[in-house]
Length: 474
Image (tube, rainbow, N blue to C red; front, side, top):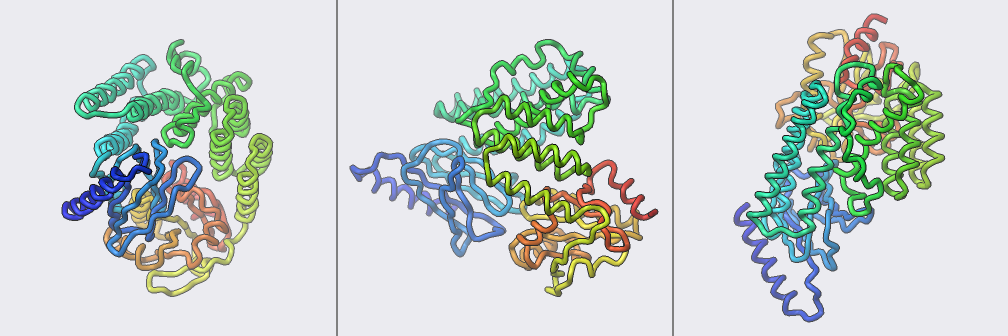
């Protein structure tokens, strides 16, 4: 890798020299390159906002080097397979990455001009992932103690940022994004607190919070055009709308026990999004996210109709409307008592089967994607555990990627997982649409008559084993 980086950097220095000697160049270019280990496709996509910047092909050694002319500085997103990550590009940057798709975020490292700021961001991203688990435990503390702990964590991040900016020469743009990241993450932690705190009466709990617990809300910009395509901004908005919708919900539902599946709560949330967000792309993303999340987990046809009608009334995006309507129609074909559509699947010896033909007793069907590697490993280990506890149940796992047979087979081999009851779709895109595989954690419960019992179970949910016992004892 060191030799490769040296060669690339030498090439970039040559290019820069040519650019500087050209009077027609305004010096607003950047280079983006690197190496992807275990690629799932032969290309990656670089995007800024809603516009696809380009599809960048990998060479025979899974490397690439791409020049960005007329650079618009800011946050870009690069995507490969089902994974993505953000990168900050500014004029004259020459950022080279190296990553392994089996540990996408954890293995990602940058070199070259512009690398330090992006290594800062990826390190902060990984630290936040670890910290979120710790914060979930803190949620059982009383409000003042919770605030004290979370504010202490936030101050530690601010101190880290200050040390970084003193050590390195950073731009105002970097500082703006870094500060916003810290704010988005810790304000989201405060928004999720009532949901994670023990107890069912969330209304009473909200009332007892200190008056200044959410004082930062006065500064929220629900229509931030700079961050409108930024993951951390949307993550914060989702947490915020969950919480303010809870507050609105309890104003007319009193001390009723809170349920995520309440159509009333979800209608309140869509109404608040519509009333507070005027930017069309931000509004559409939030409306779509919460609508599809509700419908994908719902077993309430009436609630689905109400939510779909509210969504269609509030969004102006015709593609989103059509997509959601198609999603609902596909779900209706997977209602309890129905059979799975006829879908061809392959085992890892390339033998073809019709999906219903491999179901001969109570069966659980789960899915995995190379783009969600942690879920893949957790899913396999969970099935291994359940197979021992429930030998009368058949557990089938299907890879959903369109990457051929050898790649997922190699992943199983590398993890020392066997291929028993492991399949992949012959026609991935058609099959995913027919089975409405969103999210990939979706689990089908099928009875011995090959009839669907549940099409939206989750093997990791607390109620799953109860559902499994119901399947066996029916």
